[in-house]
Image (cartoon, rainbow over all chains, first blue to last red; front, top):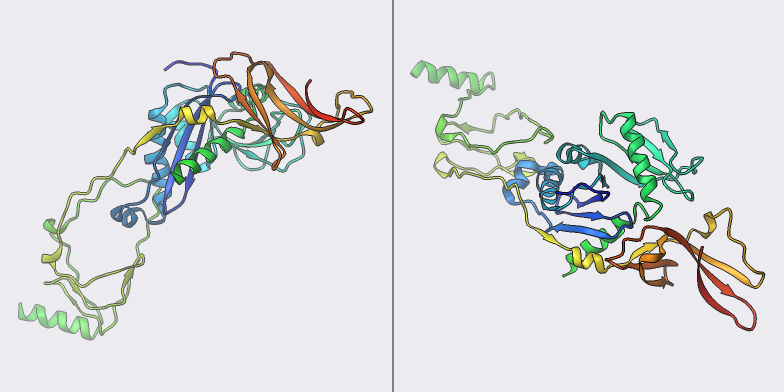
Amino acid sequence: MAQNNLTGYILIEGGESSVRGIVLITDPKGFPADCHYTEPVRPTKPERILYGSSFDSYAKEELILSSLLDSVEFDPQLWICNDEDILEPLRKSAKIKTVMLEESPHVPLEAAGAVESLPENGVYLIQTEEHGNPLRAEFPANTRQDEVQQTAKMLTENAKTMSILEPFDRMRKLLDLKGAE
Amino acid sequence: MALDGIKKYFSRHVHRRIHTYTPDDAFMIDLPETHSYIRRRVETFKLEANIGVNTAKIELHTPDVRVKGLRVKIYTKQDVKIHAYKTRNKINVYSALKQLQAMPQERVNIIKLIKNKPSSSKNEIMLACYYPVVEGAVLKLALNKQRGTLLVWYNPGSRQLKARSVYLIRRLGLDAKTEWRWV
């Protein structure tokens, strides 16, 4: 696997009845370099008995995340996910910087690149673009402050050429298309 | 043996206690590896006097006992079939690179967020602003009129990375028309 300035996105959706996931590696423009998705994972009868309401956690971490990570051909410099359930396992498996990002209603910070910590442990606001609200960024436990700053720098740099959260929309659309087929 | 039976009889009918046995090895079910995050709960139920447990046949004479929503059926030891259960650890993964490369990226209108708009003539109205768009890599632009968003298709082979804003401007007057302007 080659090391480069790619960004990895992981989207996992679903609940107790069915879970599915998709991984996307983009270049700095947001253009896809690699993309794989899983079939919907539904619990078998023994799994329903064994895992009960924990099936979605099991499916996300043990089945979908590991399968998606095994499928990618490039190592991104940063992994972005949409689900806090997979934040820690993703960090553990990928062994690179990992963050969960989502929109926030907070007022814009002073400038692009600004970082502000929130009361929740490991949660920050990052102003990636000059315009608009900062993003809410949740980091895995024990992420060092310098890693948070490096991640914020990467995101701010990427935001100059792409919309940071937009790939998740494309990934959802693709999963919907595949679900409808 | 007879004394033991009498003890058990009185224990059950006077003290409402039943004797329990540890199942032998033949009855042990080989459970797969479990995971620390799985939430487990052990529940114990006090058996009423009208519930009898025959340990020889392993029968539970009640129709109402529920374990995690599953009705416990009356069964005998002979009915228990032990199968090896293998957890799945990999699932099918498919490539969707071509489909995703054909999909446009979408930019939202940020005109309301722009504090310092570029100067424009009096006969122009700035309708929308989309950022960031890498001008040199653009293959096609399209306005999604329903959502007010800009759809951007990039050239896969382009290595351009210089992004700009693209404004949608409407000219007023006799030559009224809408045009794109890169800033």
